[in-house]
Image (cartoon, rainbow, N blue to C red; front, side):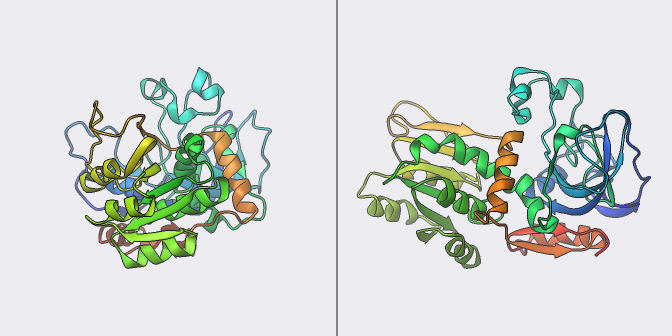
Length: 346
């Protein structure tokens, strides 16, 4: 089968031929119908050779949708031909966090060598994908897999962080979304769907600011040195009750600290090189600062239900599998609007 692989540290990814996987006991194989492309892959491919954590070559892609092609012994919860998406942050399945469905916070996965598809295990930018357990797939029925697959990360990550801050998102509150791109425009929709907060979106690009408006933001500002002052004016000086930074650069984390109000949440989701120092007097009293990782299996099920009811959708651009390496080049140059999705066989 054809697959987009990262083969050598520092080299661009390329399309290669690899064997079709076969399921072992408890496993299943999907014929991939859609695979999302994420900025996290660019981060992985920027890591130096010294200490690179994953075996190479690595098939990329951690957002996956497909039809069940083959079942290993002992798999009974899904049927061949069923359309599903894949829950990506695989855990041990036995610890306290995993028992709550929060495998994204499994403390044993690293020690046991359990890695997500595309982030250590063979990923979804291929014609077929091996899934380690049936608990890691969620049926989507007749939903379009191309439009649905970004929900497994670009949707699940913001949904998880928004849910963590729901106690701050009461009627009359203000939520700020910094970065209205692939994850941020989904976060705006989720904030509108599950909270009563006034949603303020910031981005440096006019195209993304327009996407924020289309996604339901009440107010949209350029993400610049004046943004914090605009936010303070909008809130009568009180500041934001929750800030969601989907960039994570020093400029945006500094902005988040200037926008936070008393007893607020600041959530750093983006994985750029910024930091958010917290000490007495550095941020308003009561500020809760957090970083998060992906989301839980129950949250993915909830999110698929929200999407099925039309409460959230993802702006996508479709590409063929052979276009995979070029998609990463376009992503690196900022030439992707919303989320890129690979459609094998297109």
